[in-house]
Amino acid sequence: MGSKMSNRQLAPTVLFFLFIMFMSSSPVNSVITCQEALTILVPCGPFARGMAPPPPSKACCSSMRTLAGKATTRADRIALCNCYQKLPPSLGLKPDRVKAIPKYCKVKISIPFDPKVNCNTIP
Image 1 (tube, rainbow, N blue to C red):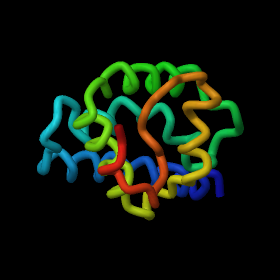
Image 2 (tube, rainbow, N blue to C red; image 1 turned 45 degrees about the horizontal axis):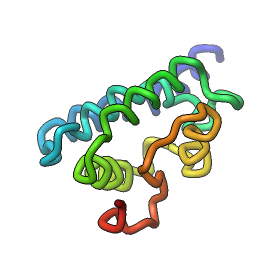
Image 3 (cartoon, rainbow, N blue to C red; image 1 turned 180 degrees about the vertical axis):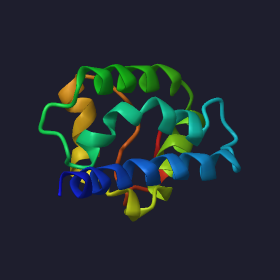
């Protein structure tokens, strides 16, 4: 029974990495690619999927700081917003959890992690 639980927990992670590989074939025309952003944010996966309790891990917060440091242009922020919106539901990300990461980590990032926002309105 223990191996079935670990397989269930492993499935979203495998899907996440498969999605990263898929996205690498169509890079965003920006300094930071969707693949790079997703790779940076891998430590946030358990929290974003609701598999880890609040607050996010130190590694997740460090990753969010790294991403914020790379999203320096409007084109970067729009590309990252579009990247987030293209993530398939099968990854199991919980939008409320994803939106909460910058607040928990005290990271200022000008990217609205919101699947309903118009990414082209980002300053």
